[in-house]
Length: 476
Image 1: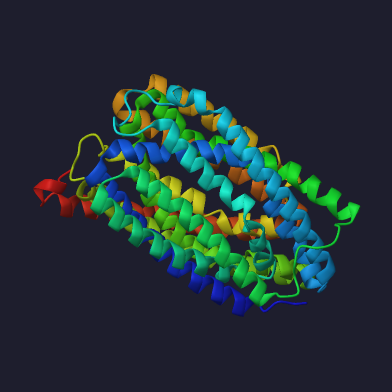
Image 2: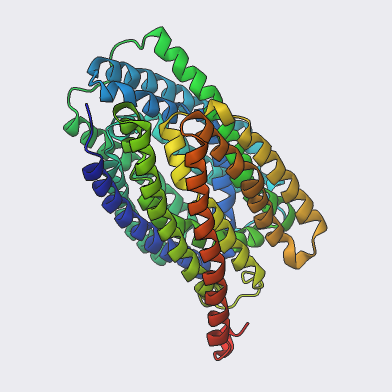
């Protein structure tokens, strides 16, 4: 069954764009309320728990990604029985994953206090809060998260995104009211658990409405099971490297610099993550379509589509990078009311813009690589990159002057992306699927946009500094 790439991509893009706007506005308001009503220590706790649970989610091993990509061919062949068998297999795996995450999470309870440098807010119990976060993380695996694979395999991520958007809006409104009325962090965390359950219930309802003939039943053939397990081994290494590269940053900052430093780092990273969510509306709308076209179109046709989507993504990344270069520093000052504990010098936002560009400019390549199931060929890449990032993290935090320790955390991630991840993953795509001629075309496009980004971002930063110099509060 050949899916309508253009129609589904448009639906996915619109849904992702709306969700990106919601994720840009509401979490910002939420974070601002936290900062103004509760204080930066609570933001630090949120960041720390998020990073710890990100490590625990390694127990998922990558089965979700492997199963969705394994479904692309049966969807193209319209083999409903095989899709149902995959879904049944996926459900069993996810229930085991949920149990593993909860069990491993409980084992970390005695060591929580060692991960926080300095004091914690006096009115909270670190262990109780962690348990609530742990229940929230493991709940999806016990419920119906596996149903999302059916939608993803049919290039209908817009359904999942729309459900996430609707539940998020209601969740944030409820949270705002709770925080304003009670100033109680426990109520905020408990509300997230309730909306996690609601999201899963709506997901299974919509999945069954759109695909009523697809239910978890049957036994997955041994050959298909072995293929999924083989893919999972490679994806797991990618996940380990990703956790080392990103989730350990907050843990390192917390252990060496304290919760306020985690909040400061989280504020800068939040801006990057929010803008990245807007760009993701472009490339995330294509994954299922790429997966279907790989089995229904020629390589030449796939490369033309790939380059068009890459150009579109780069245009979005370039526009966002220019705006960030000009507005990042004054925005942080306004947002945090100039709090010296939360505002860093000019190098910090510039490094964040650099990180944003190099990370987002590779996303179309990663999207196609995932759709083509090219995981085994660079399975050691994330481990090497993650190890480099972690070692540089610790080294910079220990040896750099206090004012530049957070910059060292950002710089270590940039180094691992530029010198390990980008060359390795592009080599895989252009040797395993495309060819050297296509590689030259791709890199010419990347180079043109990179030069434009450097020039235009430098101009935007300079103009911003000149404008801000006329306002005392924003003066560099």
